[in-house]
Length: 87
Image: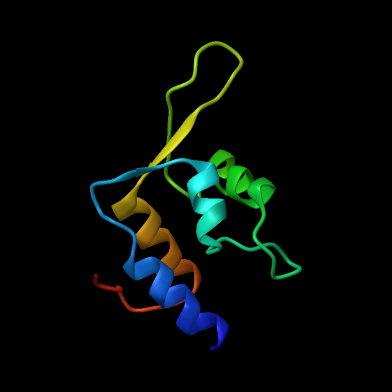
């Protein structure tokens, strides 16, 4: 199975109204680094840069990011130049 087919399958599993944590996104394996491996640091970098829309529900100096499923899908489809993937 090629990488794009795998991404499409993972993206199709994302529920629009569900909330995902960076760890959830990492476990899906859909955000990869330059070595083509899932990376929590890449997820946080994309959130902090504003490329991946997220809400910080943390208090004080500890961030707790949450990402809506529909925002995650939109980001991934744009990043990998895919048409919108439906469930």
